[in-house]
Image 1 (tube, helix red, strand yellow):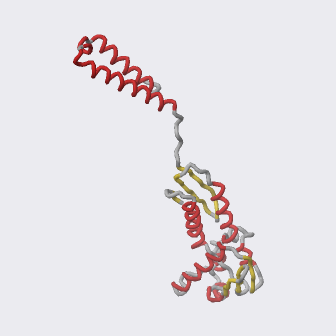
Image 2: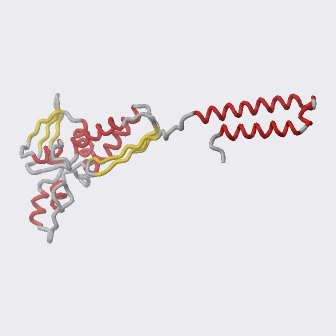
Image 3: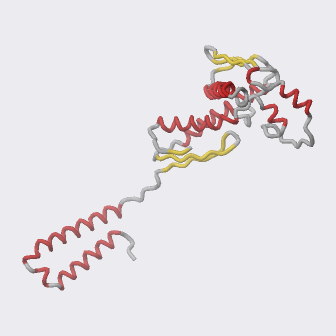
Length: 233
């Protein structure tokens, strides 16, 4: 059992030298070149083994980052020796503060809870990108994809509000909620230093269907800008 490559190489060299000492054929002039070549090769082997055995073991180059965000968990593997966990966590916090309905202080939560129908807000790339993307898909699907169903989601107990068990569905209640649903009821315009939102009183947004995918794309773009090519988000 050898503890290091150096011990193994030294033992091999000793064995060969003993054999050469006991075998007179190695001292014949015709084999002298071979003899010195073998000694040189063994010397190189020992030197190489010593070099590698003294080298510290290299840890895995894949950085793993995991945590919680937007009401769920995330896991990222990156082919790098750079520690960019703090930067990625900071980006996820910014996205969460913009579009997470699970954070009552987020921008989308403040818009949803506002009684004002006309809101002028400071620029926020995360919210604005999700809003315009959602609007594009809403139009492309003729309303089949609708991020304004948040009041219905809460009514059925799948939203950010405390879950409640419904013994029966109140059709009149559902009909009144449906009066708030429809992205065509919202108005959005960009301003010089921000954007303006107009919404029906009581109407709410829910970007859950696209916000997590947006976060994945945003983090992936950031990773690639650092020069990293191999990763999984």
